Image (cartoon, rainbow, N blue to C red; front, side, top):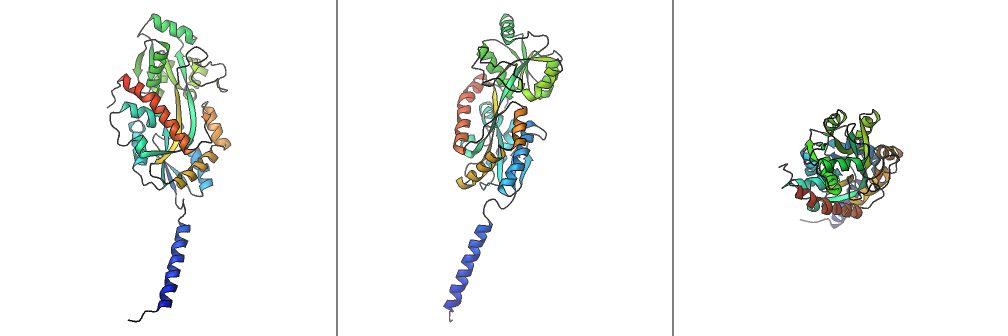
Length: 325
């Protein structure tokens, strides 16, 4: 059999050029990106994710599509990302509930946050406000004094056993050296309704959730957990101002990806995130809840931030011995 070497060389060159062309054509991203939100539609996390998706899509040149996968306090959606292909086409919006609280609460999780996930970048840090029913004293100092005089009789509501505001309430009680009675509800909305009706005394929750009830005169603010007073409620003092700097009831968000996602893809997603966080619509959304925009951040900074939060909170949560399993 006689070989035509010229034809073989020509064919090889053509195949090489075709492969190179395909590689260029397949440069990341070449198809829509799935952004998994581990909570329901209409939540603050969901709305923020949709704002980010809109502007990240413009930068990346591909659609970023939000997919809600609620359940397990955020662990279901987190697991979806942890087990996805590490190709940049499935990423997640992380919260302190998913990446910190659940690590301390659950004896086992279907993923390991430090082993199976890596950060893309930070989004925001949001303080909590302590609100009281109208039957309670008007200042934090008076509430603490009342609780000390009536140990275990002052109640605080939460979105449920093991929820962020359950743990924040326990942290506040420890910092103030008081004994509070925890009353779990099925969601913060139910706790807020009972607070406004005087059926529970205190609640630590987001400003965006509690402000309407305070404006209606059915509750009053006691303190905010930010480092300095919020421009949204400038008359509300910080816990630090009131002598309780150890109260660090702050939630936060990031974007994350499967651990083995390549560095160049993470870098591209990080740039898109940081750019989206400069958009006025996104800044306004965060400002509504007195959130601190944490952009720009690097993936390494975001990873270090999460690790520090787990080091601070996980031992405390485990010491509470909350049974959610």
